Image 1 (tube, rainbow, N blue to C red):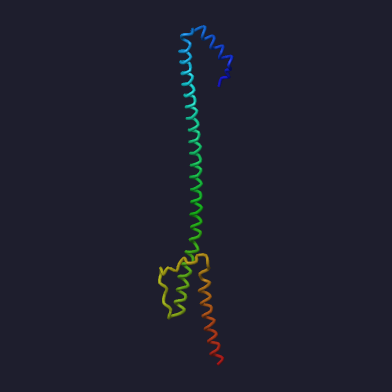
Image 2 (image 1 turned 120 degrees about the vertical axis):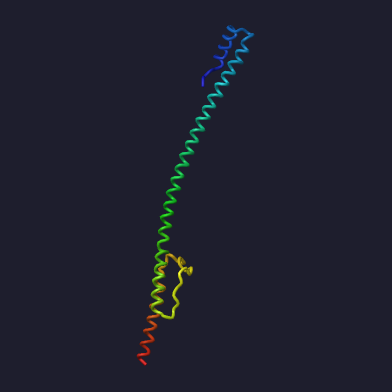
Length: 152
């Protein structure tokens, strides 16, 4: 803080000795030392408080940024979940339509009960391709047997 060398201290000590005398100089030096100590402690306390406030403000800013990032990520995840649920809903609707078509084509087939636990098994595959292939193979088998009965 202050640049006080040995010569300056000697000069102040000699002047203090001349002015105060040898009896009051130690008491005065002790009192000045206490005041300087109190001033240093006060200044360091204020500095500590300022640094703590700055650190807390920085932490608050980071926490706010993290909260906003989490909210943004949650919104993205909700959008992705909605996109992922859309094929499942479409697959359920297609399976119900195919079950109705199969039930109307084959009179011996039992109607498919709702809630049989089969929905959502493979949400990204085309649910109609397997059923359509089965219907096509049944139709071609029926045609083959009809053609062979006509030939005989």
